[in-house]
Image 1 (cartoon, one colour):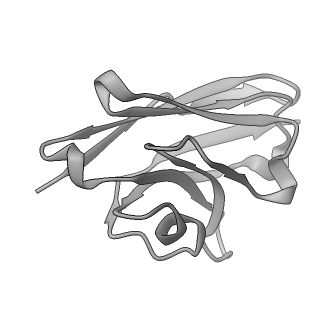
Image 2 (cartoon, helix red, strand yellow; image 1 turned 180 degrees about the vertical axis):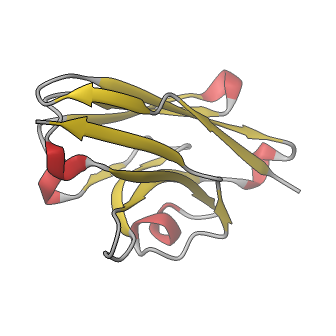
Length: 123
């Protein structure tokens, strides 16, 4: 059973930066797509960014383009989300996700979810 372990959330002022990490453990060879979702109170969960672990394809939601960067460390089966120029509206619980396919993450139907890490941006 693959597990996803997130870290790196926290509180920051608007304009600041945070870096989230997600490590996939156990049978990571079955995973080809990973990414990040977020859910703010009272709102639906939405995809933030995704990356293909084999061809390094990337996807970004419009609201993070130019501010967030997703990357990977294949040797460690880890993906990162570098978040710059954070805004109060970025406040949410951020979830790591993984799937056999890149599109499985982009389409919002990943097989695996992490526990979530809170990101809070104050104005």
